[in-house]
Image 1 (spheres, rainbow, N blue to C red):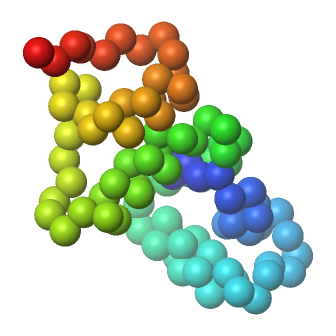
Image 2: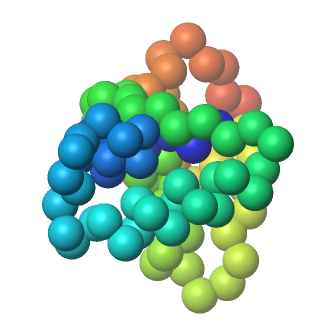
Length: 96
């Protein structure tokens, strides 16, 4: 499952438009072609207000010169804050 907050991109991938914006048409065509290589592949648009943790993780990974790997026990502070906003019911361990 691929989720994202760009409505125009996800609607284009889903084929909801007769004419796709030229600036993303090649990309969406490639995505649809690659998706056919998987037994199951789905695309789901989510509201940007619910995508803070994914955005924070991508920002951290893009800004890092080394491999980016973490789990619930060692989340960077910025990512942990975004996760708490996206899903306040999650419990995060306190590191001492």
